[in-house]
Length: 201
Length: 201
Image 1 (tube, chains in turn purple, cyan):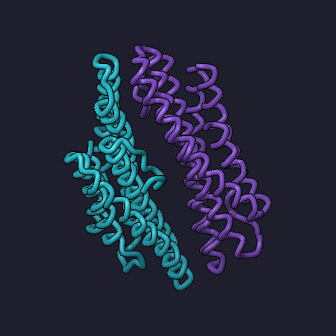
Image 2: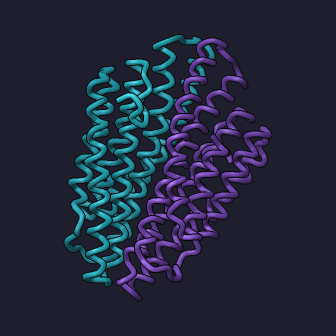
Image 3: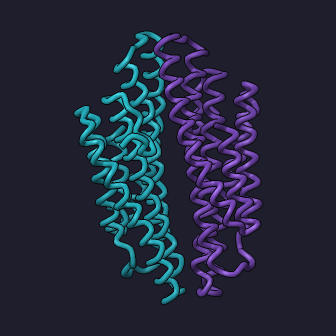
């Protein structure tokens, strides 16, 4: 699931950079596989709980997997949203944008990669580091709102493309939120502590 | 959790309708309670799984509760996003908006209410009806994008307020998505079938 979610995001951002509608199509096709895999994984969780009756750290791990599964599926949805905006953008000529989407994507990608690494390595310290990156991405998203407002004021004929940029920025910010959720689930699993909403950080 | 999520959404929409910043503050304060309740509910789920080792329909119910819990917490986040937009809107004079936010809110509210009723009554048919409403809300959100683009073209000085309207519309659409998730969890629990992504509808 992690690999598929990463790939969906990669493809959507590459579609943006290269203005390539065929990459958008790959994102849409990939979403069906991600959805099917989410269902299969949930069934495995149900079977494991029913048949093995795991305890303590095993139980926490399985609950963490169940939650990460949902977050990764939603990252697939966000990639679809981005690819839809890219398709709409291709209806207008290319021009400079007031928001550095590749830079935002780079932070979101780093967060996702590090949260998945933290999961694979059961590394709560690495997961904790992901939480700090989320503020950076939130600030970039707020700056995108201001930049888009200013750019529309300067050239309203460009509004439609700018709204697409705004929505792409918001979807990247949400991918960061899901990476944050995954990191928190790793900490919950490894340390047995609930750090959601930074209650104990 | 359902009641608190409903109330957060109500307050945010009332804050929009009445242009009342004190209602925004209530949404922000309520979010902390929602977050704390989500954590407590997750701990109860963990305890139940560890101590009772539930089987079959009981196990499915507890997993459904765990998933709904996450969706309801996120509806609280969406209400906060809406309230933040309302605060920003209050920086500009009131004027007519090209998107009927109260109407969109009414559909989202109906979806949430009916999905929670379906949960309380273990009513899979009622849950199924919620799934149909989501297309309506998605169409309203798409129409909002077009309406906002057109309104900015007509009066760019109004851009900032219109972007806030666009973001409110998107958050209402996401509340509908979470209500849909809850309805799907009810069907999974009651019928033992996974209807996510409309795989078996």
